[in-house]
Image 1 (spheres, rainbow, N blue to C red):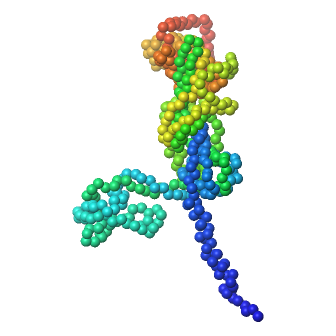
Image 2 (image 1 turned 90 degrees about the horizontal axis):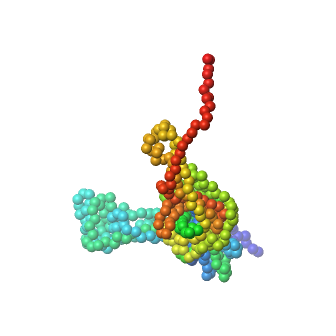
Image 3 (image 1 turned 30 degrees about the vertical axis):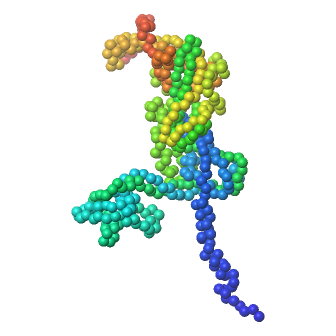
Length: 466
């Protein structure tokens, strides 16, 4: 006959209790796997730069084994732009963002950290009470574990005076004298976000990760050299990179303004601690530093001089032989210039050659008459001498015809003839088959006269009551 066992006498209960006790460590063991993750070695292979201060980056990596991989630091991608190459979507089953630690070295900024990094050095401390304490610095261990993860420097200093260990409060120290040259490099732990990817298995295909992030832009610069019948138009690009370094990457420069879902909000995979402050701390866009207004929008041009400038589409057709150097891709409202093997470090600027065109041109003169009568100028708070200087001015213009299949984006241009400077102005956006007028200089040798004759007069006075 079997005896009845109590609840705690059942053989299954100890195992159940053991599982309950081991449950939290077992759950934490999965988190510990990410601590042993291998660094995902990737390289920026492709960068597409827009003129509004954003860029599309593609990183390429070749994982050698499955398991957890870590990207340190993760890309600061805009919201909704983090992308993994199709084919790896099924292989990468988990993405995790965790806070990690990174040791950084810098010069000690105060005597507190300086004392902490010089254990064993002989020092003399002068206190506010004018007392002097001499001895060797004793390292303080275990302080971080007592105070927690975010512990700073201890509130005291330990000295071996030869007669014992003295504890000196840091707040009472006025001056510090070292017997020899101290170590001036301090190391601090910086908490940074890290992105972990779990790869189920490897393939021969490289892993590609794409994302859009702000902080990189480009500004065009033109040099127009006049020949006998054609003008050689060379475009250079100044690229300002404030995001991340890349080496021997394919660089693409985009003409046009794409629509972005968000230009300020970062992806949650970029790290929540960086989201409120990253975009606001960026360097001002380069086009603002150059004080060129909104010329980054290649479809908009402000006619400051009220010139009679027209742009026509396809008045004379295009010619593929107009392109002497460079390559591009027409995407409709966007045009992409491709430049290969470019290296730009973070925080640096670089100038690259983009294209070279041979375009037909014409030179003509435009008369800009001033006030018809000198007394009209006086009514505008101008003197008679200013009125004589402003009126009857003739300008020489250059009419440039874009016979190529490449659009000309808005940017500053300077003109030369046989390596001699002629003038400089803003070349506005010109589509293929269009034409643009660029002022060269005042035609001082062209004389003009202005006369006015009254041919009629209409009296508009009204008489009221009489």
